[in-house]
Amino acid sequence: MKHDLFADRLVCGTPVADLLAAVADGVPPPDPDHSATCGPCLDALDRLEEAWRSVRTAAEVVVPPPKGVEDQVLRRVRDLLAVGWAPMVDGGLGRTSVSEVALALVAEHEAAGVPGVARVRASRVRASDRPALHVHLEVTVRWRVPIEAVAAQVRRSVAHRIRTVTGLVTERVDVVVSDVRGGSPAGPQ
Amino acid sequence: MVDRRGDAELVDRAQRGDLDAFEELFRRHSPRVHTVALRVLGNRADAEDATLDTFVQVWKSLGSFRGESRFTTWVHRICVNRCSRTLRQRGERLQPLPELPDPRPGPAELTVLHDEVGAVESALSSLTDDQRSALVLREFGGLAYGEVAAVLGISLTAARSRIRRARLELVHLLEGRRSNDMFTSGEDADEA
Image (cartoon, rainbow over all chains, first blue to last red; front, side):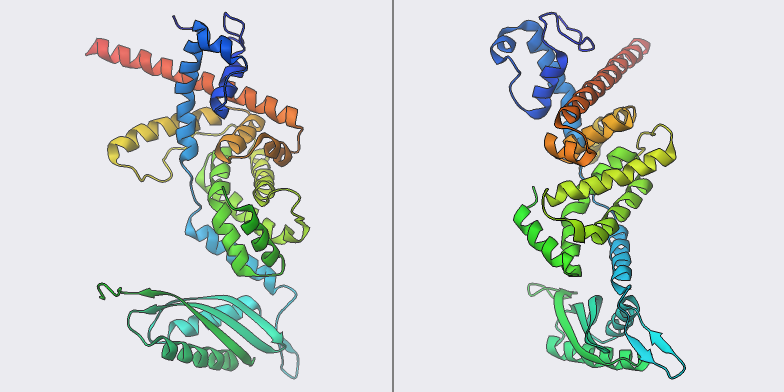
């Protein structure tokens, strides 16, 4: 016999919500001895378990945000980081400020053009002793390129380009090679 | 569950302006936060906006986070507040999601999964905003009752009561749908 799950209580007096809470939280019912032998409770527990399985299934579907959201978050955070700190160049008739975001983009663009670099991201650009800059780059290199030579070229090119474009001095360019693209030791492409 | 000690160290570094640490916090927590936003708001575009705004707000407010609650509880609170704003602005009932978010299983499993998840999404959209937020935090966000209460700014008793009512309502909706499906498939069989 099917018992009414839409009623507040089963015919035995047990609140349906109590049984549902037990099912959902994965704990025994409030009166386990009664529920273990009560027909209406056993029937209700079976049906509630069946209904709640769909909820569990849906809850297991974790939906990460698209990559674009992460990029936008980081861009906006970089913008916020740039507020209140912007290296300046005295241009005689006035001063020019260059935000960290702009510097990061210049560094990324320049490093991406160095042969052997597959992908690059400027995770930090900071002034240690203004207006000298510290640039931190995360780089993916191509398979079988000489990494130290590529890193050295990235340092030279980025420092030169930042100086040329903004007039600011780059004191340090840290390069972290985080990945290699285009092959593997087992089977280079 | 995300390692709390690891979070504390990352938060500490992020509070000192370390963007790498913040990125790691984003990677750890954004899947669950985005899922909660998606289930509360019911559509992808609003959920993405909410996730974006949540983490920008997290960055802005990191200085005020004292570690008195778990980091995940704090982030969910920001997320739910952001979602509530959207719901208030929208001022209308939610529509069920038309699609599955991440179809990894095969076609047959996918159909079953799609039906199950779709039914739950549809039922969720019929709950009141308050009930849905509480239920989603508990079942989809994996928060304890006390954390749900903290996120929603209500008492533990009120949180338990809200979740209890929401669960009952959800099961009634799912049961009602199942009865309708059985009735419909019976009619189909009769016609065949």
